[in-house]
Length: 264
Image (cartoon, rainbow, N blue to C red; front, side, top):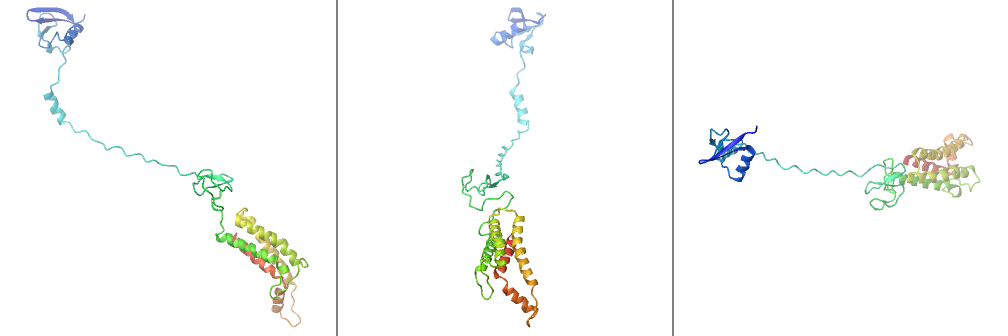
């Protein structure tokens, strides 16, 4: 059975009431803590002693000293701003493309304008897919290569030109002229262009330049094998005479071939 309460105010006694009803009277102000209440109708006590009806009220004079003695709240500094890390431009190079020297993005091989940043790509400035840079006209290797090719071209024209006291043979009337045109003109010009543009691998360049040097060198050695001292001439004078009689274009072509080898 629920707890019952009686309320006494002066000579008047009212009740019994259940706890919910008494709480309703307290909220309405009809029952105050100074009024007498009884839980059995016999013994009476002030309503403030019934904790289930009137919860104890904290005294500020007792609470404030406790709060003042509490340790202060630790103030933490505001969190540092998170740095924004920007990803570096992609340096990946496609199998058949280059990299723009301005923004570092992939571009089509041989492109003149970058499709990402719109900057113009100067010929020879794009980064090649093997990690190097295509040579420009001002690089020593390209200059040596072009110089070697020019020497080869000049040497190939020797059968039609007389130079100092060296013997010149006209056109194709000698094997020297045919040899120069066969191994010099084609191989020399082709190797010079290949070195300047880097369109072929290094092995091809060595092979082409080697054909020039080996082919013309073998021709000269074959001529020297027939040298014999005679007519009062020593071997040294016979060799010098033979060297003077050899088409001077052979020497120029060999010099150009050496330049191509050095540039490669």
